Structures are given as C-alpha cells and as structure tokens.
Length: 541
Image 1 (cartoon, rainbow, N blue to C red):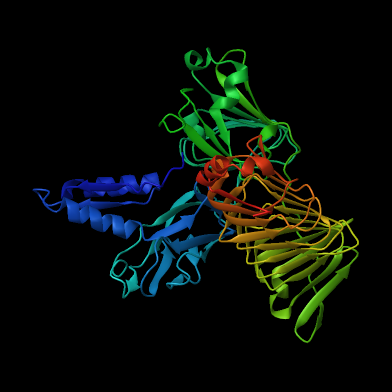
Image 2: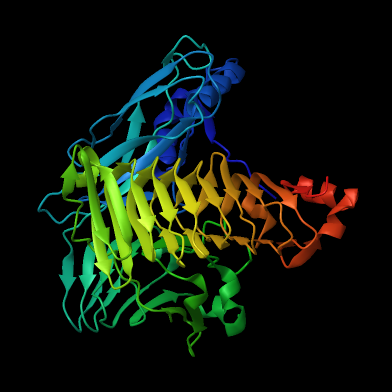
C-alpha cells in the first residue's frame, strides 16, 4: 500500500501549548499546535488553518532525517504542494545563524514552476570547538501572494541535525561510555558506547573498533567509515532475543542502500514503528546484501558486520578545464572531451584514473558537454542542462552518481552503451539511443522525478528499474530485436511508466513475472498493469 504523509496537528488549550510545541520540535515532524478557546468552539476553524499553514510546502529528505557536518553544505529541495493562482513568495533562514546560515533564502513560485524543486543551500559554520550535535530548523516567513490559499500562512519549520567535524579521539584499546551527546573518532581496538542523544561516531579507516549500545543509545546516531573491520553491537535483553533464530535476524532490519539508513525492529514484533524500535545512519555507499547479522552465544546482543569492500570516500579530482578560448573551456583525454563555459569551469573538477574519467561538481554545473569514448563517472552536487554523448565506434559507459541530475540529455551512439543512473534525484532527463546495444540501469536508492524519457535504438536493448519512478516514457524502437524492461518492484512506480512500440519479441519482467507481446494483447492483463501505473502500447496497434 502506498502511504500518504500525515501532518500532525495538536489542538490544545493555552496552558498546554508550550508543552506540545516542544513535542512537535522533538519529533522533528512538522505539523503545528493550535490554541482552542475555553469551550473549544473554534476547533474546526483552528485545525483547518493549521493544516493550511503546515501543508503549503513539500521537501525531499532522507529517511533518517536531514543531517550534515558543520563544514558541509546541504541543498534542501522545496516546492509547493498545490498549484497557486498567483505568484507565491517567501524567505527562509535557520533557527541559529551562529551555527548554520542560508545565503539566499528567497523562494519565488509561479503557476508554472510550483511543482519544480527550488534549492536552498544551508551552510554549516565551521569552528574550532568540539560540540554536541545541534538540532536546528529552517524557519519560513509567511507566504506572500494574491492567492488566498497561501497569503499570510506560515509553513511549518523543517528540522535538521548539524554534526561536529571536530572529533574527540578515543585512544587505542580504551573503552568509553558517553553520558551526553558526543562526537568521537575511534582508534585501533577502542570501544565506544553512545549516549541516548544523537552522537557522531567515526571509525578510523581500516582499523578494528567497536560501537555497542542499546537501541535507545544508537537511535539517531550518525556513523562514518563503518567498514569490514568494524563491529557494531546492539544490546538486547536476553529474554527478548533468546527465541529469535539467527536466520531470522535479517527480517528485523531494514536497510536503505546507498545512504544506508538502518531501521531495527528492536522488540521483534515485525512492526518497525514502535517506540522501542530504532533508526540510525551509516554515512557512505553500501550494498545492503553485504550486511550480516548474528546473535551472540549469550543471547544478549546482535552483532552487525559488513562483508563488502570498505566504502571509500569520493576521491578529490585534481584537474579543471583550463584550455579556455572565447569563453569556452575544454580538456582532452583518451576517455573523451569535456567542454564547459568558462564562468562555470571553477565548479568542475576532473580526475583521470586509467581508462576512467571522474567528474565532480563542487556546487552547480550547467551546460556541460561531454563526449565519452570509454568510461566517465560523475559525482558531487548538481549537473543541470548538460549533454553526455557516448561516442560511436566504442563501448562507452556513463555512471551518474550526483545528488541531482536535472534536465540533461544523454545521447547513446556507441556500439554498446551502458548508462547507470545512481543520482539521488534524476529530474526530467532524456536518453536517446541509436543502432548500438543499450543497457540503462536505474539503481536502488535513486529516484526519477519530473518527466524522463528513454528512446531505445534498433538493437537488443534493456532497461533495468530498481529505483523509484515518477514519470518515465520508454520507446522500445520500431524493430524486431528482443528488448527487455525489468522492474524489481511494482511499488517503485509512483505515478506512470509508459512503454511504447512493444514488439513481438520484447519482454516485460515485473517482480519475476514475464509478460510477452501475446500476453499484453489481453485487455485484462493491460488493465492489471495500468492499475500499477504501467501502460504498454503494442507495436502493431
């Protein structure tokens, strides 16, 4: 079942207002508190107004909530939740400008762009002090608009956690138990038990160390550099854990690949929403199939380990385009050609490693042109309105791992083209292909928003969808080749997937079930797929 977000509204009398406002803040859930008259006669109007005030904006955020270090910038993506009849203007600022600031908090939405995310860059202020994690918020001014549905109403604040980059070292071989929120770096064979507040913990790369704590102590913790030498132990009462089999432990953990948010059903009742349950975050790129869970012989703890290769931080690129003529900068390499406007060149770093070129954006990179002969990987922040051309007479690969890829064009002209979309958000991107064989892979943990298209060429092509799709149109091409569309989970289709020119040799694989052209000639099958958001148009119709 697809769930809608529920905005909490607390209707209280005046003496209870402060208590409930504190609760809303602690929950970091948005919503609002409204004050009732002594006879509660204003309850209907008050709650209506509160809903309108709190539901004017939508934003994208990780499952575990927004968190970043004080030396980092977080790009918050915000849009309206309904189309206005007139322009809507508001501003944003942080709750504590000594800890984090927004350089430009102005937002201007129109009837045309109301559903397109606008970015507010939140900059953590770096200092030399060792501090606990700060729970802050982005606060908004009231909407200003000629639309009465918006004008005068104040959106609910958006909460985030700012972590410290000055870490207190835990000496090699020592054991520390925190009593208040802490930011620590573990050294060889050290053991750390976090507090019941939000802690920041960093494992030293390659060194064995241990973090252990109850679900309450691990809740909201942010852990860096968790690797295959690290130990993470969740302490559980023996009577709770004794009856649970080792083979069943993984059922009580939910892991989001990539950001690696870990949800733990701590009372083993198959309900992840209980107050006893917990959620914490491992920062880095992880494969969820590489996690293992094991019960200790004493049945007092669950040991979490990672058997995959230790996640590596994104390497810092070393080069920038420096061959600039008439406002256009370029760099040439055996992997291809990179061109970008001189005004944007400072935002792009380039690093060549063997047959792979890595492009990293420091902030926003727009109007980039890349011709790919071998392998290109993109990392970093934002690529927008850029073009990637996979060169003919080669077998090029393009892997995109940016935070946001928006309104870009990917032209696959190679003999065999492999395109991997691993961005957190890929917005309204177009893929056009030619006579070569194409593989388009939308990975788990990535999301396609807006309206994206993939036009497959006249050869054997495949599209593999493990990520979230809002609107995607796939044209299989008017050919007799065996194209394949593979969807791992129907719940990934949030709005509409359209597949056109579905030929007699093509296959649609949905959650392991195979649909051929002959199956899709049946109206009952097409109707069933349509109810899941999948529309298939057959080639001969």
